Image (cartoon, rainbow, N blue to C red; front, side, top):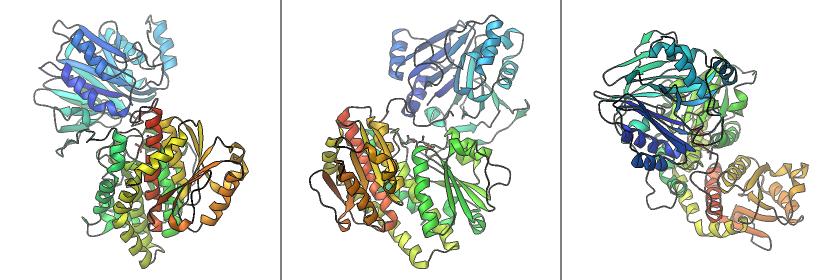
Length: 609
Ligand code: AGP
């Protein structure tokens, strides 16, 4: 998704800006640009469709130098990916501006600005911001006042940063709904949409709050709150080592991340051993909150939503705690009835997903007993805004298709089930089973990874297909959903998941000899029901790909291919089966030649609505 990097220094900053953009690349984008104020106080601009390396080439060919600058990677929302729509946008050869987010009232503002004589060159919502800023500056406002008045007029979400040739050593910026962080240097200051972009130059950061406007120069840094009053915000020292994005011998980050799961799962669960009681893994005060919790509301998007769906089975069946799960983009706009003492749980790998963040922020006063986030990114917006926090130990996830983040979220959710279940109806025996299963989980995942070659062979059947159905029952239904999401996301094969019992209510009409059907079929209480559903598929000529353990009693035959999964404890089957489906998608995508790590149209961190 869009990324911002900005610098106000006494040294030349083009390489700092480019390196910042490189560090944000994994999030997904379609164009990139950079504006610098040169020694003669002129704006110098490079921007184009394509990757940051193209921007670097342009910079090598026609170097632009300056000590003040802004840079951007754009993920198109308004206006196609193109050089014209790429940021920075310019007004009057005076201002350059970059923007993350979406301006909802851009059409009205565009009309006003056109009437005032401004000519628009792009189809973006962003261009209204730069012209409005220019208009306020030309009417005599200071850079700060012009930015404050501009953002006052904006509806929607934004993180913006701008430079002005009349104030050549300053960058002014603002945020609401999209993240922005200040990086504090020595004799220089920076801004970025993620601290990762600035770890090359500093380890001292200030996370801006909603409505903040900030002005930086090499020697000064002043933040103003939404009312315009100067404020001090907390400074954070981030000293842990930055993980370096490195393929470590794998062909793709996705494959590397799939293989990192035994370690990531063990590290996530190991937090239990670091604390006297498991409750403490969820942050200070968790025990008191958990004592009063009578129900759970989970809100998340995409893969994280699927983790929530799995958790609902665990919380209700194992802990006896009522649980609702909803996608954040619906939850945030719905009038709700919430029972007393409900815990709001958001799940987000990035901790920056706009819909999940809005869902948390829109929760009514006193509606929930407390909020808990399960996230992979410390210091993310969701982490900072939640009462309780569980940090998964997946390590940085680069592949757009979430793999290790999902399975570590499931570990966190099983730990939550245990913590709440102990206070409810969970037996001592069940508690011990959960802990033992979590300890053994990395081994079962490792055994599944060793099925790679068999899975690769299965994947060949999917290459000529345009559609696929994924079936599961009970807790395996959300795993089927996750399998279908992975396949469509990276191979571009249309895939849908159904609870197998629903097949006869419609989707069975789709089944013919051209429709591969993947069944998540471990031996469990619903297996016989699932087998009947699979017979319905077979008798209509459908080709079955069954992921099952030996106890399930399937065998490969004409039009039925069985992958022999390890037999593992019931409670961790959703996690173990997920890994096999991840490998299936990976191999299909690989053979189809898609961009596995950066699938088209998608972004790693979805910071717009
Ligand atoms: C997963 O493969 C997807 N890339 C996507 O569905 C993702 O899980 C979703 O956008 C939510 O992201 P989050 O976990 O960072 O909130």
